[in-house]
Length: 98
Image 1 (cartoon, helix red, strand yellow):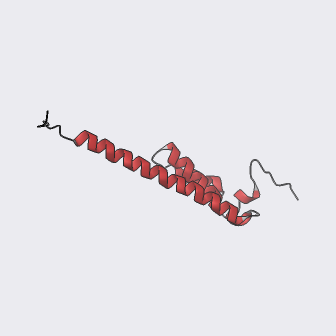
Image 2 (cartoon, one colour):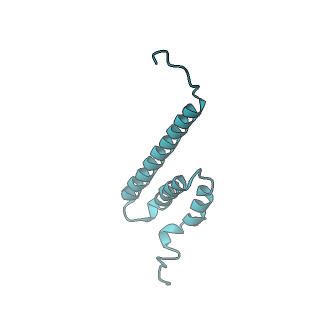
Image 3 (tube, one colour):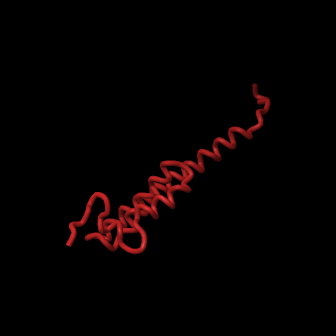
């Protein structure tokens, strides 16, 4: 029996029909920015291997942590865009008190 290659092809990354890294690379390619891609990639990493590790609960908690962080990032990016759009579309007005 060949030893598990923990660097190039760990067993918990190669279960099923697809290798986890291939799935992750395909999905994060479409991310709107590098931070979103990294956070989604880590979320997927933990989800894709959850049943092949000693502690599924721990991997699910890690996936949730990365997913929550991704959601926060996207919400802050969306809020920044709204603020920028408001700033760009505000029409200056004469202040009658000055």
